[in-house]
Length: 352
Ligand SMILES: C[S@@+](CC[C@H](N)C(=O)[O-])C[C@H]1O[C@@H](n2cnc3c(N)ncnc32)[C@H](O)[C@@H]1O
Image: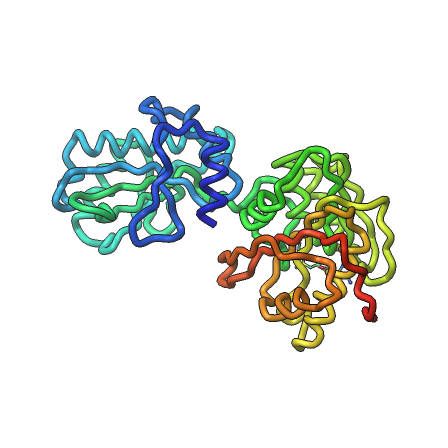
């Protein structure tokens, strides 16, 4: 999601240099903040980015081997960064009191010694394997030297504080945030989430950009309850109408919608390719019925071939604008941004 992350970083952070790629990695970028960037106030907005999974402070050391990191001056630099990461956490969580080192050979004597000394300098406890403050020690990706990367949060940033009600089928929140950004949100949008489940897309949409109106529909009473709890925890419940209804059963909505989101069920829930085809086709058709003439539709699905087949239907009402492959829960779903095309009739031969 590099493009999406870079766009968000440029928009939300005060950068002092262009965003850089990390050699040989397609899942990370480097941002440069002002020299005063070693303060909690400057770093906090990085942790508030919604499309990243983790933020690390990168310390570069011009040393030939990790053993050299144990010199007093270098230790102080690392320990200061660890304390800074701990200060970013709300005091009441008290989570960042322990740390762990992740590195090739992290159980070697060199790293044990580094760990012991850092515990003294930073005033934190070394807990191999599960310490909250994560330190990655690695060779500098380009050229000479070593880097220490300090994760700025005890848990991945995709674990959102608003998620008080879990749901096994819930969408990863960073993927949802990316989908929202792809939809080019505007405050005046009327937003609909078909098959909204526990409300991830609705919460992320409303936290990223308000809406003139927002609605979620799901046919499962239990998951709608989860939506209700999550939207409340996010402080956006009052802006959303939740509807208990089957999308395929003539739910008419309340007016039409400028932006529609959906991540249809998958895995065991949809057994055969034909079931999946029928489900996706129904979703596209219903979305078209509920959409304004210039609506954007964002679908997140694993069923790439099936989406291709649905979009190729001559009577289809959606034009593909952008398709992004992402990584979530060990799978590679895609985010599809579609625009409604006015000049075509609704699927004439569509039968639910
Ligand atoms: C993959 S989950 C959505 C997850 C959601 N984005 C979240 O983060 O929790 C798919 C949802 O579609 C709902 N669903 C499936 N078929 C439906 C239908 N015909 N009408 C309404 N909801 C449906 C399921 O109840 C389930 O909550």
